[in-house]
Image (tube, rainbow, N blue to C red; front, side, top):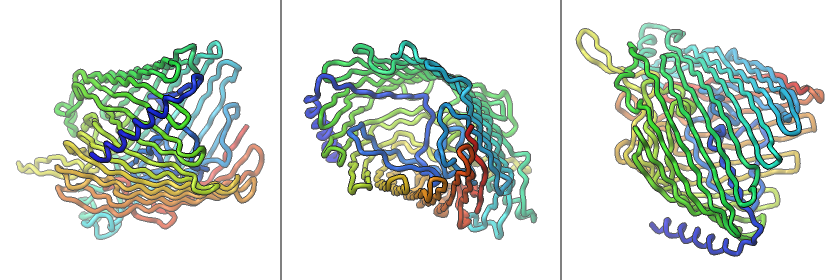
Length: 585
């Protein structure tokens, strides 16, 4: 409680200071709910420094819990379950530049990308983005990770993802913007992980499994239309969009999500009043029968509507800003019937461009549909649909400081209470043999819930930047859970470390180095806790610009061939590489 009182007092202090704001100050909170989710995963092959310290709205970095799957900044349809190398080109493409990239490596991995601006006019533009990533090699299931295995076993880990995105943007009378996009993503893969069936094959003398019968594909379609003002028009500003998402899989399951949201703001003399509104309409399509999955008795498969409201007032002054508001959510047909939580956060400028203090008392309600959850863990069983997650209170504070001319630091800590958090566990299924019912572990995942869980989270980030030559970053995060119903926060790490360095040797040649670590993970297997090996990943890369229109890249991942797991049962690729060319025209 003392922590809560201290942070509440801090935000009240921010509000008092904000009353000194000049009349011409404008507050801008451009929130894009339908934007692509980008997990915070450091990329050793990409310049990535801490942002320059400015008097801006500061929020704590959210922790991510999945082992990094590819050493680059991932987007929803690009989240891979395997650690095979992927590289970024030495130069970023521009909106008016055509771009193509081709590569390949061991594990029969392939990479292809193509971008073209279909047309670029002064007031409107359209472009097309195509991406393909795949691998077809065997992944080694290490005997060190599974006690019943006396030797390593190979498993065919086919994964093939193809994505296309078409975007359109138009400016209307210089002050308004109409935009839209359409995304089609087809991901076909096999469940290659370890389970009781794999163990049975091993016991019969098999050293390799094809898994040809145990495969899956996801089709995700995403269509969006958005209309917004670029700035305040007079005293008003608004942002309206509607988004349709279709998820379907190989088993005939489908989920349709219509997300509509509105962001409105009214500017007064020295503060801004705003209202955010979100409406989720979700419609499920279930298979009539299935010999393996139990869709008929699956939970949370109802059609339902979720409404979310967030009224708020934003004050801003010479020494900082503060947002005072509440969040409310109302479920119709499924989910919470009604919840309300605070939404108060602020930033105080301790010294211009040197130090900033931030604090927050907030909460949230998250809608967990298949479209989002399968991006986190694609191996979740199709007849498992998650309940929504409610966080009644999330309190944190931190400080961002420029501790030297080229060194930035962000230190934060906080505590949150989560109602009904989910944790992935290996799914058990029943089998009847000679009249006897037994249970066996599968290579798909179920979830277990904790009624109310507390989690303490603290971290530090350091960034160093020297001219255009060298960029380095270090992040350390600790997560400590308070649980009553379950023993551990299954498959979520207690510790996370990451380091990246990017060195530009010449104008044409660049090298990069990255290291990631996750420790303190446990799995729940056959009704008992199993320690998972710590995840260590070192990756190296280089980019060389031959010509103005041609780059060569090479990337080495899991350099020391560490046998860690992304999820229990799913070993990552060993040492692997990718090399290729990037063209600009």
